[in-house]
Structure formats: C-alpha cells, structure tokens
Image (cartoon, rainbow, N blue to C red; front, side, top):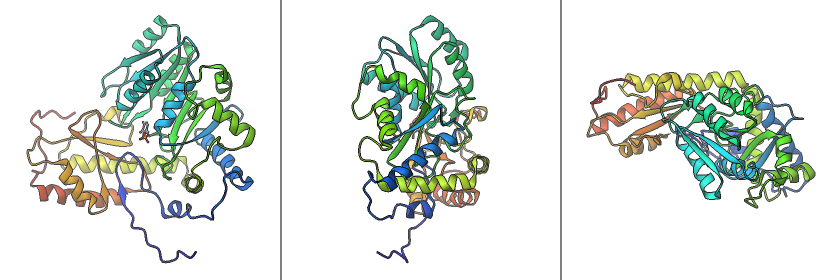
Length: 384
Ligand SMILES: *Cc1c(COP(=O)(O)O)cnc(C)c1O
C-alpha cells in the first residue's frame, strides 16, 4: 500500500478532548497488521507504561501504569469499583460535573459513599473535608478531580492529599484533563492514583485510557470485593505483570498513535508543553474578554486549561448557530456543563496562539452574522 498524496485537513478542536493531533500521530496508526500477543507489541506496551509513570515523575518500582480499552470514564469506574475494601466508605469531593459522575458511579455500584458537595465555582473547604474524615473513620478512599473540565476550576490536590494521608486513606485523583499538560508529581502531590486518556493531554487517539498508581495498594486490593469482571484494576495489573499484555484485546492502532504521541511529548518537554498550553489559554481568555464575554469562574481558580464562558444576555445569541458557523470553517467549540448558559473553549491539543487568533476572526464573523451586539452585554453587569 502506498499512501503518498493523502491529505487530511487540519481542524482546530477547542472542545475538552479529543484534542487536535499532529499529522505524525495520525499517521502512526497506519501500520502493518499485527497480533498484539507478539513480543514486538508487548515491548511497545511495556515502554508506553513506563513513560506514562515517568510523566508524573513516579518511581517505576513504586508506581505502575495500567492500560484499559475505553474512554476516560472507564478509569473513574475502575478506581472506584476496585479500590474500596469491604465495609469501608468512599468520600467524593464534589465541586463539578466530573466529580458528580464519580458519585453516580458509587451509586451504581451500591458503594457506601459520602457525596461532599461544594459550589462549582469555589475550591473545596479543607476544614470541612477534615471534619468529615475525622467523623467517619471508616473512609478508606477519597476521590477528587484536579481540573474540573466543566468549569476549568483547579482543585488544591496536594493539600487535599495531605489531609487524606493524615487520615490514613487512599487518594484517587481524576487528572484526565490535566495529565501531560499541567506538571504533576505523583509523590509530592500526595496522589496514590491518577488517570487520563490518550486523547486529552497526550494529544493521541481515543480508545486507550490508563491509571497510574501505587503498586503496594494495588497488591493489597487483590482481596477487596470484586464488583466488575472486565473493569477490575488488580486483575489487569496482575495479568500485565505476568504476561506483559492487557488481559483482553488492546486497541492496537491506537497504541501505535500513543507511542508516537509520547515521543512528541518528550520532544516538546514538560515545561515547554505547559508553557504552550498556558499561552493558548491566555490567548483564549484575552479573545473572549475583548469581545466583552465573562467567565463563569473567578480567574484565581482557573486551571489555565479551560475557559468556560457565560452566554451574553442578548436575544440574538444562539450557541448552535455560532457553533455551526465556526465548525463549517474548521473550528470546534463546545457547550458548557456546570451551567447550562455557558460554552467552553479549551487549551489542550496540538495548537498554538496563531490558531486561537485565527479562531477569533471566525468567531467574530459568527457574532456579526447573528447580529449579536459586540462587546456583548450582561444584564447583571458585575464581572465575575
Ligand atoms: C474527559 C474527562 C473524563 C472522561 O470522559 P470520557 O467522556 O469518558 O472521555 C473524565 N474526567 C475528566 C475530568 C475529564 O475531563
């Protein structure tokens, strides 16, 4: 097969993942057919797992990366269903739609859980978390989300983790929308388990997700109640340790793309990549502000990865219409989550400031086309 001359149009995705990928990552999927049980493939998986641990500066003797075939939610499901000992409770620190999803998973499995709710536009009160933990000594597992992708709020993971460990519990952090973007140090950040999907910070393809966690805790979980067959953390860990393979068929081509994306991650570097995401974020923030838009959370809580924008009070504003106009010109914008009257522009993916500038030219035209008044107006006036 000769594929020279193939042309794939570049699109700018400002949705919260999957992200814009490089051509080299797209092309890495085009490989000769291979049985994933072959040594050649096993070696690729092993290197990928090591790299995934290195990204969060984990000691390979202490931490392991476990791969699963699925989208990011599979990680949340697995951590919650696999890491709760018999007769113990989970504490969900809930200040956004992704933590809310974790609470729903607990409900589905019939786990004993405390849903500790906070406002979606505020960081959780550490004293409250501490109180709940002292009052409930049977809490064995605590779950929080680092970057609440619905709002872009950054939770104080290191501080929460310190409290969790003081109370002898295990700390699971959903880092799906921060991993490989915002620098994470699994040990210093007091994280026992974190997670992500290939299509977010790593700018690879959908279909493969991974949990990075403490080996000792995984080993201990061998005797915990089994609540799922396909989605059990220990089972997958154990199988991988013995055979160097995923228990069931991996997404082969997706893994080749991930291999290439990891190479590109190291080429760009942790610091360089985070700087790029931050400058993209700044460019988005400046772009919306210039048009008079307001964000739904205070800037001091922003993770620097998502801009959640309030709909203006203008009867001519129609998100769908603006979306379709931009989409037709190669730019994807995304509806909001925590607040129905918001939309999101995200700073992940293989994009830079020039792409954001090009987007705003199209976005401005979309507003003009809809007759939305610019700068946009809000009845309440006060800037958040
Ligand atoms: C994207 C994301 C997930 C996973 O969502 P999927 O739709 O299953 O990919 C989980 N948590 C956070 C914080 C996310 O941003």
